[in-house]
Length: 404
Image (cartoon, rainbow, N blue to C red; front, side, top):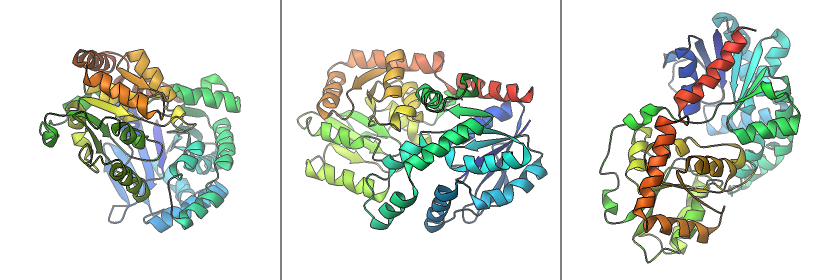
C-alpha cells in the first residue's frame, strides 16, 4: 500500500512520525511525506526510506502564525491543499495519514472530493492544548492572536467532525480514546491506540559518563525534554525550595519559549536555588539515554489538565528503559502506567510538598530506587511497553485497510 503522510512541520522533527513511518516501511508499505520546507532544504528528497516532498508553507515565524490563523478560520491549509492532488496522483497514494488535528480538515476536504481514505492520527488533545500552550505568553500581540483565532471550542467542534468523517482514528493513549468515544459517539472499532513507547535501540545510544560530573556527590533529579507551562517544571523548582539543606540537585535538560524560560529562571532566583537547580538547555537526542541513566531519579511533573490527561510523553518510556526510578505527577496516564509497571512514585499534581517528600523518600532509600528502576527496565525491554510491540497495532490497522 502507498501511504501518504501529511505533516504541518519540517521533517525530521517529530519522533512519532519517524517511528510510525519506519514501522510501516518494515511491514512492506511505501511511505510518502508531504511536509513543510525549511530554508535550504530540497523540495524532493528521501530519508529513512521515506519519499519526501517539501512545500513552502511556513518558513518563518510570521508565515507560521499567518497559516495558524488561516487554519483556525477555515480548517483548511491552502498551500497543502494546492499540492495534494498532484502529489497523490504522482505517487499513486492509497491512504492519507494526517498527523494531528490542524491538517485533518485539509485531508478530509480531499476525501470528499476524491473518495481517498483518511487516517487521522491525533498526537494529543489539540483543542485543550491550545489554552495550555499560550497560558504563559506575555506578548500582547500573541495574546490577541490566540484569543481571536486559536479558540479551543471551535477546534473541539472541528475535532468532532474530523473523527466522525475519518475512516480510522489513532489516539495516543487510552484516556484519549475513551474521550473521543464518549464525546463524539463514534464506533469503538474506529479508534485504535498507538502510544508513544520507545524503541529498544534507545539503550544503545553512546554513553557519556561525564554528563553530570559537576554534580558529583549530589543526588540528581533529572528532567529531560521540552519545557512548557503544562510540563510542571515550576512545581519541581518550588519543591526544591523545601530541600535546601539536602545534597540534591535538579537538572533541567531542554528548552522552552522565552516567556517560559524567563519565568523559570526568575523562580530559581526568587528561591535562591542557583546552587541546586541547573539549566542545561537543549540537548541532542543521542545524549538522552545518558542524561536519564546517570541521574538518580527521572521526574515527569506534568500538570493535570484536559490536555495532559489525554496524552503521554515519549520520555516516560525512555526513562523506564534507562533503569532509574521515576517520580511522576498524578496526571491520569502517567499515574496509570507507573502504577501498572511499579516503576516509580506518584505525587499529587502541583503539590510541591508531596513532590518534595517523594524526592526525599528515594534519596533516603537506595534499595527502593534499584527496585523501581529494575521494574521499569522489565516493563519496557522485557514486557509490552516498547515500540516493537506497539507498532504492531499500527501495522495491523493498515493491513485491515489493505483488505477492505
